[in-house]
Length: 315
Image (cartoon, rainbow, N blue to C red):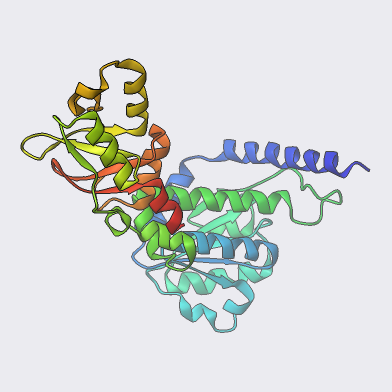
């Protein structure tokens, strides 16, 4: 058997099924987002077996993106873990068949506690669905498993539906990179997201006046080793920037370099960044503009320079 070809077939099969699941999404999804967003407590995700594993991931994704959430195994819930649930919570019950006894056993006690139920199921006519306030339909026509037994396509659909919920809630909360960093302080990711430009910029700023000579420009760029210099006017306000590239172009364009002044060579309207902005924002600006340094500005005053090397060395 050509297993690479078989793998592509499985991918295509699952993609096709996901497209059908997407077409099924309607106003009930808006209701689920609103219910979780307006919840004064937490979102409790519950499942068992393979769907329980998916449920655990959904709860973890929500918790890391601003939606307070926990996962409770359905079997453990019946032996005391229901005590983690409060009337102010929303419960997301996951069952592809909607008939899993472990899940159905939870419905009555959850309702007695007073929590609304969102059902994520592949069977909108199931006993679970009939007891839910909102039904998220993850029905698929067939599993990728050739026997049609092992949860494959159905768990993929459940996972993607959970991702869609998570991202929509994240956007509704206007969850930003710095918020994400608060929940991920460990490791390189958290460090990068938390660090601001002022933490890594240099305050040894290369600087020339608009009337500085070409020789002075070259000396300042070479001396500070940042591949650029700021140009300031008589009021010490930044009016331009001169980079290595500007110097090379000037050499090609002008014959009388001795009398060339900074104001003639400099680039006006240059890209800048603020000291309180994130290091990741500086990197995005550099990438978008194909540059390697950014003046750090407070008003019209340059307070530092951040270069790609500062970011790479930190990474």
